[in-house]
Image (cartoon, rainbow, N blue to C red; front, side):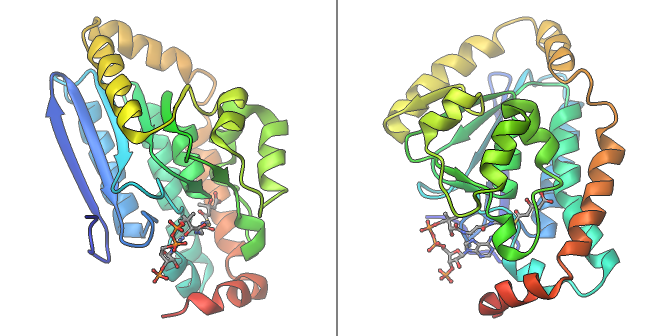
Length: 255
Ligand SMILES: CC(C)(COP(=O)([O-])OP(=O)([O-])OC[C@H]1O[C@@H](n2cnc3c(N)ncnc32)[C@H](O)[C@@H]1OP(=O)([O-])[O-])[C@@H](O)C(=O)NCCC(=O)NCCSC(=O)C[C@@](C)(O)CC(=O)[O-]
């Protein structure tokens, strides 16, 4: 059973030097601002924890991994500063994943959309199931995947980013993501994935933590300018979210 809390849930369990961070939201694990803030704070805290070698990022349930930005919050944006603040939540999470001292392994049990694809792309290694299709739906709601674009592009290149972003109604299956480099491994079921993930993370967490931390830095070399870049993108997305197109597209989600 997933959480029914409107602001979502976030739990961390630390065992054998592996921190497993699980987020959840009743609306298909979408992100409201508060949950984005909590995830950012948690990753920043874990980054300082010398007893943690590795982070596993997962979400609740056996359906969608993440539905991206909360439509309820998107539709409520009424000015530029609210828009920038909301999308900065995604910028901050991606920057926290990028700068976090430990490698992050993603556990993707189902579909990921919009900002959810950004989170997957910001993981350092990704375990997924065959149900983990991805889609960048942003154009259909009058915005664009601007904040998450650098993370997605870093994994699958500009062409892959274009293939996703310019076909916003098209799901790409898990094998497409594997071929492009978004996923590292794909399994037929959640059980199978979890079994292999346990073995993989157990081995990884036993290696020299300093070596893992140095490798993490190397993997993200060249992204030092992302703090400002993603903040600028958050402002651009915030501006787009004010457009009549977005308001009209999201009207049906108004509660
Ligand atoms: C995720 C699946 C595949 C699950 O598909 P499913 O498992 O079949 O579930 P569902 O579609 O029945 O959804 C379950 C419930 O979650 C709700 N729901 C679903 N998504 C959201 C959402 N985002 N915000 C708020 N509510 C959402 C949905 O409306 C429904 O509510 P109910 O009818 O039960 O009351 C499907 O629900 C889906 O495709 N959702 C649309 C997700 C989407 O388009 N997200 C894009 C968000 S925009 C974004 O992230 C912008 C960003 C950050 O990238 C911008 C940038 O980078 O600059």
